[in-house]
Length: 248
Image (cartoon, rainbow, N blue to C red; front, side, top):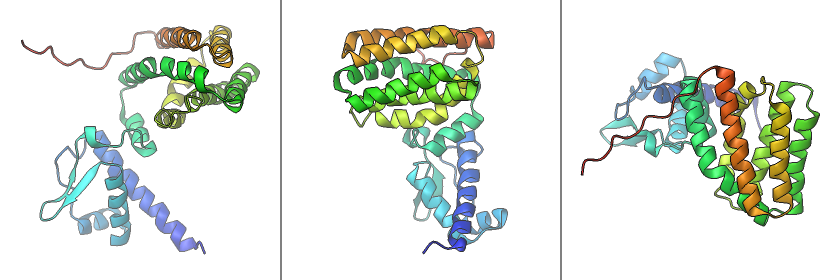
């Protein structure tokens, strides 16, 4: 049976995980650096060794750290982190420069979402289309920005699930964390009527099974969404740094 002491321990464990994890993502503890010894963390955070060990296991599972005999617990390179993990996403969001964050997010969506809509048009079930339609109807009926954002996220999530391809689903699952910020910014603009028309075009193409139309409509939607954010923020958000050209 679930006990109050179990709940308290898990809550403390989550707090320790959050503090150490956010410190790693923020760069306070650099790649390859060793975390303080277990007992030192216990003293710093006033928690038991059991709690610290549980937190370390959690962070290991997220790919942030690794423990080796005689060398301690070290921070792994970001390339080895589980970047789609909800906590890792949240830690990034809490520490990110918003413009660079939005640029990276749109890079991902532009690369993946038109294809997801295309696959959804080919593979969506009636229930999938109903969920996409429900998202659009929620957007159209929204009385507040928060209601609009929640339905907008549900709309896009439903498209990824409608691909019937489980490798697209983690992207949908991360949207409630990653897209809420950008959608909340966009919801303050005056472009909502046009956005509803663009979302409806995506919905209609998927419902009709027209893969190319779904791809095209999604590309138009994303392009205009990026332009809306630039207009609302008053400037273009910075693109992620490019790799230097290779010498030949």
